[in-house]
Length: 492
Image (cartoon, rainbow, N blue to C red):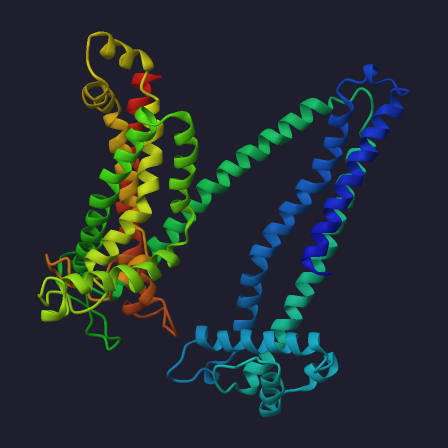
């Protein structure tokens, strides 16, 4: 049974359990709901939760754990002599996955029967040709041991899937039967359901926390592996970024950090004034009709995918800047300061446009939170509207606005696609905003793209860059939340 239909079956069983639990509770009370301890729907909800929650939890854990278990068991089948000298076990396992996926596709499409797929061993050329007709490309020549490992992978994966279906189905049925059996008019269904929902809320909060911890730990341990292969002094204090995969790379974060901060600074120079002025207008000067129209229209910018902003930077903003600051005598200014469309200024301007709704929305909420009595007091003392905004409202909202700017800065530091398409890929120190530079996020993508060996410093450096970026943005977020919290304590 496919996983989708298994989930549908569990939900259908839970819905049936809701109706059965509710009907059993009413039947035990002789049809009089007032004789029940709880409302009838609580009895149905108890059966529904007991049927649904344990089964789905086991299903989720099984789907997360099974791939690792299958990977571990199959990788042990591949002998060392089956691994080429210029390859690793991880790359060989990638071929195993491709062959296994090809066999699955061939069986699903009817090109191969299960018996044919099980008997193919050394005739890999025929298998490659047949899979090629189905559009399945294999990255390299696969030895018989790898093909056998792929077939073993399919067998173990299929067996695990069957066991998962059986366990989840039995668990759902057991939960349904147990909860239905204990349903009667004296059962405290409301208490049990509320405790169960409380436990689910706690579990959701723990999942968010544990996910963050897992991300940090995964980057931390890989970063330790990197610093075992590369000097930490060169990483933190060197001046050159030059990975070459020959063992003599210079991997300093400082040029990347400079590009990241420089582009983010230009983005904030665009986003903060425009976003703040827009927030002041919408909260203090615009009437209800204008605000109802303008604010949603402004916030549409936040929903545009960053790849679209990247294309805008590459195809529109960059060439426009070149026409002004480049092209020599033929340019608008008659200078040749900008040689290409990618530059710090290009990425910074487009990123600033992307951050405008972020700054304006947060600032608007913060300005609106300033008590109206402060405005009325200022106006009552004879101040004008503009003086009230400038000397009362903005100073009162300043801590919250600073927090919004810091949150926008952390968003700018973590941006990738706009920088990839608008800023270039050159890591260097320069104050010229018309030159190409790169950032930490783009280098992470570059180092992890393609067939890479996760045992080399040139690849593991991506994790060191990632955890450094994480610490930087986390610090900005913590500082912003601290400032906003202080503000809320003062005015709420």
